[in-house]
Image: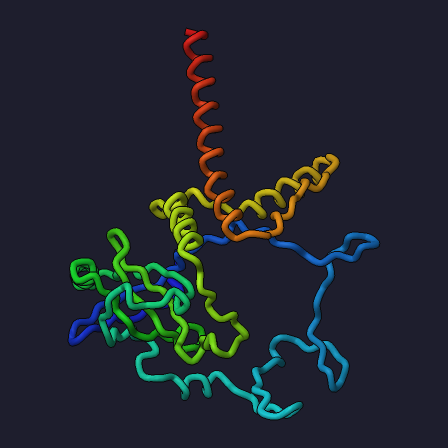
Length: 276
């Protein structure tokens, strides 16, 4: 696997070479092509000049910035190089902050940072220092002609780099029409806290899966095999008349589900004993 980016990580006067690798997989995604309904032939997109109405070859295409409606300035590769900020090939860790201080809204995409040859000792040292201190490194990186904020944190034996949004990219909540906090009664709050505790538990990412993609894949496979596909029955959530009643019913649902599972396990054990 080839790295998406190669450069140096620096903190203080320490630096070491690294490669950046994607930490996500995309093979689970379903990809679709647009087809002509009449003969199911794929639709082809061509590059046409809107002025001359002719197809344009890739070698004759340049990048342009629209500074006014319909008016552009051409930006060349040399222009991008001239705009290169200091540290285009360097991750400079500027601050070390408590991990809990960062709002989830800032996080974007995770990557693995892998040390290159002579940098392994300094890499391991930084990872251990972050692990021991409970802090993450904050810096910047330039990827695909764009500077991004980043967080560097220990993850198992390695360092995970997560790109982040700049503060200016986040919309303030006061720009939206949000409801004012309503004063909950003691009974409502007690039931809500009880419901939270009923569903409380450690985060186990492996127990969550993309049910929609799995169902859609099953539909596609059935159509390939010529089988009839029927839509599953869906039910709308009941209309909430009383918040207290809704909370009580919500509390009863996990208990009922737990009792059902217990009954199933008991029946299974009885069948095993009979078989023995």
